[in-house]
Length: 89
Image 1: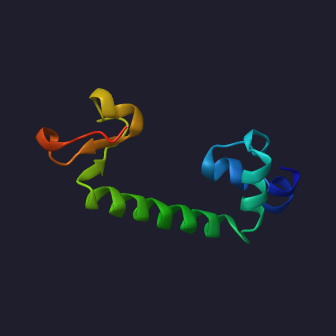
Image 2: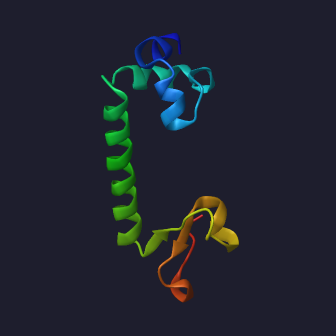
């Protein structure tokens, strides 16, 4: 966590809204491997696109927290076709 503060200064907290001290040791170790905040942001965007693509292939779309409702709101997903959605959990 100290390395996050040293490498990224206050920019990490400003961009992601997370204090470095709130990270686990494994999370901090992973993030320290990035050379810049932009590299972390780009990886986050790529990961979210991949998640969205996989969910859409299963007929599920992510919902924004403001518009999500029902049992799926806490998971941030909604079925593309509500009548045919089967929750795997």
